[in-house]
Length: 307
Ligand code: CP
Image (cartoon, rainbow, N blue to C red; front, side, top):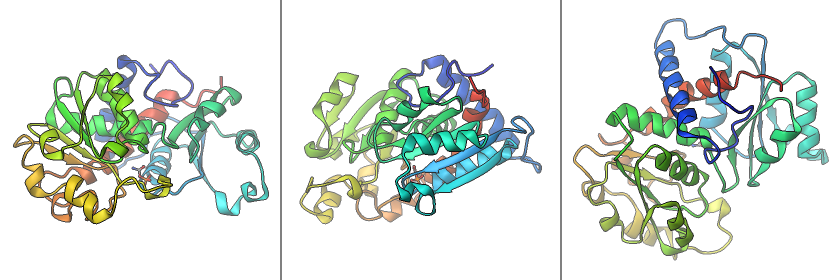
């Protein structure tokens, strides 16, 4: 049993069965990760290359660990010390690592569409680790896994995604994923950062955070992406926190057993107060832990088959 595609470029192109298969497989790997011997021989002989053109802590590290737990060899390309700084093109770099035997190329890039460009040009499986403002599919999958683990289901839940939706690939992948699995989604943030056209995806849009959080099951906070904001989308971080920062009082407007999520890295005191990030509702570190099992499932189900 595997995924129907060679690559994982986004959630948009997956169907509900694919998502369920990944979550179910991740659940099995989470059990494996709880054992003394955490390594399985499933992909022995395969090679994984992490090709990250943007910084990362969680995604790069967990893909490396996932690949190692599945017994693949792993190479991390450091852009700053590679021939990319001499002007080598994206396609030439990817073809070069494939010629060295890469079965999986995990790519993160500031430009939307990079994994979609590479996938048909390579025999290796291409996995999107975040492309510009487009998608971050494995983040959404680990978020789904965490929601199901904490709340027992996804169908019928009310999920609020809060903050810089405009620049967030995490938000886009989560909107697709949550809608495919039957959740109701609310987007909350300043009008400058919540594109009205996203309403066409069947989500509700709020600019008043207190109203938007009323009775939700899940509060998913987003990082304010200063590095992607060319102009002022709000007057100051102090004003942003006053209107859209998650405080304990605001979190208490959600259901009593609502959980607080954040993909990380966090801007503490800008989009989320520290006592909420570290508080009893927070499942932020569980998200990180679950990312490992989910990324193992993705690599395993793609199988490193050179088509
Ligand atoms: N959530 C996430 O993508 O974090 P990193 O940028 O640290 O990988």
